[in-house]
Amino acid sequence: MASTPLKLIAELVTPAVMISAAGLLLLGLHSKYSNIVTRIRSIIDRRNELEKMEGGERAIANLNEQVRFLLFRAWCARNAVFCLYLSILLMIGTSICYALAQFGLLTSGKVAVGIFLGGIAALFVACIFAFIEVQFAYRVIRLEVERHEGES
Image (cartoon, rainbow, N blue to C red; front, side, top):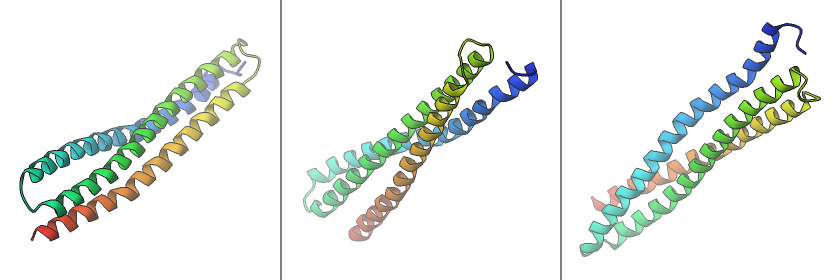
């Protein structure tokens, strides 16, 4: 058992700080994911308009390429969001297991440490997916610029 109730509370707060950090990342990624989905829908609408017109094959090909990259970005953002939710769940599990260990309901705090490390690993994977998504964001912007330059 922890030496004092205050020490126990302090030890339980550590995962809460990680939950807050993951929550902030999650807020940004959720917004980005929604924007990507909205952008895909608008490109599909634009592509449908161009298909009704003659001579828009090059623009349609460009839009198709943008959708391809945006779908990959959406996949990365979705995976990052999933990993952040997983990280938050594992951090909550860490607090619960640690408290159970402190009150003698679990034989060791090693379970809590293992769950905490799982939460950190999920956070790491989420950051990798977010990094990849950002790299592909630039490619979509370049395609958009090429399309506008081709229309001029």
